[in-house]
Amino acid sequence: MGNIFTAEARSNRGEAQRNLSEPLRNLCVSAVKDSFNTTCNSNSTLDFLPVKKLQLYKPTYPEICRPLKMPNKMKFNTKEKIKLSKRISSAAGSETPLRDLAGNLSQTARYALNEANTLEIEKVEIRLKRLPKNLEGFRVLHLSDIHHSPFTSLEHITRAIEIANNLKPDVCILTGDYVSHESEYIEPVAEVLGRLESEFGTFACLGNHDHWTDGEMVTDSLRKANITVLINEGFRFTAQDASFWLAGVDDYMVGKTDLRSALRGSFPDEMKLLLAHNPKILNRAARADVDLIFSGHTHGGQIKIRDEEKRILPRRKLRNGLYRRKNTQIYVTRGIGTVVLPVRYQCPPEISLIELRITD
Image (cartoon, rainbow, N blue to C red):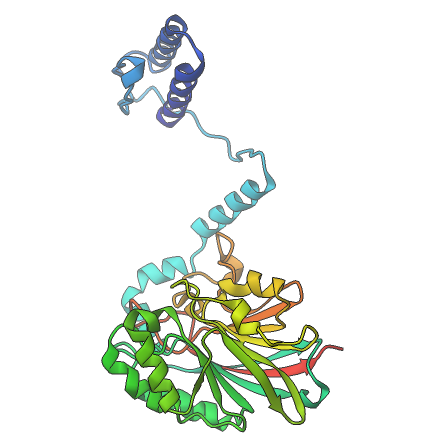
């Protein structure tokens, strides 16, 4: 009863302030008060202030005055709200993973700390309409969000490089955030990344953390390690007697992205591959007819509390995996390192091996 009355009183107060004259407003307040006192049989008290300063206090009910029961099913105006309410109810009654997480917090924390130091290989096949026939099966090694810092050790990064080299990729690409905040980590991580091995070299773009630390130093260190850094620029990449446009843009979050410059010189009908740290570039790239984008930035969420099929709210767009917008596809990797907390939960670090295929 208390909850019902509070909701009605708030609704009446809002309508009165907007639509009713002063005498009618006072009449509404009086009617609500009389109705409440009659239902609760007297002993409850409710202090009414003038409508312009109305405050509601939760009354104390006598034993004989029982709150009204709410209906089992609430009716909403839209299908989305009905679906959401069912999912919330289901989540509240679910024993996993939320209740298990609360009941086994220490065990979960240990698991999350350990997971941050694991590595998982994701092998993905992507089909492209404009892929040259000679590049059928071309293998791209993709690493991102290295975040060398006190949270992500050089040993962890070195293991990732060793695994990547064993995959024998044709080309390696890096999509930003090589450090988190401290400049003393830049040269060591650049030296390790320079050990990547592939037939056609390693190409990179910058991320927001690189700029927040020292973008110029990151760029110079990577280039000293024989890594080609593409900053709002591109070129015609040639391999196996075929070619396509390979470009990289500067980071979106720091406002340095210039897609037009990155694509300047490309042919309208040739395949275009783009390196972009932040996946928010997708809409612009789709308008520019880019075929495939490689991105990171999201860490895949880094911590996933609920399984995808049990999610209460829709998942964040472009979190990780392969997506499409018109003729443009984007692959978002979960990355290698961590930020804020040195943990991952149900979202392990990722080494991505992309195999390019011609669309049937």
